[in-house]
Length: 131
Image (cartoon, rainbow, N blue to C red):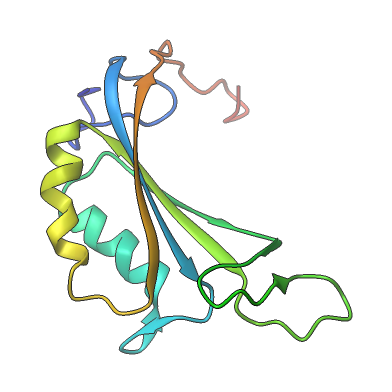
């Protein structure tokens, strides 16, 4: 799954396709690790571990173990919306990364899904800098 970017990459715009493992870590938006958001800590650890990439997705509504519904609706006072941190890499690299999450409090579900990375052709930005 290396696209020549030096990070084992599965980033858009190129890369080898094939079997992969998707890691999804669910946390509350307001969860903190030391002085920064927990989702930020997870992304930085994934980067430091050399994973191909990680993205954070903010939910607009959800509930977890507390059974409280958190929502982004205008009249709601909820401040702990669901956040998903998603990383995709080889099964070996994702599984090697999992112990780096063990000392983090506030993590909800940790999910692993087998997936397939679809190869994309390398594209060079045009003169406008876009596609």
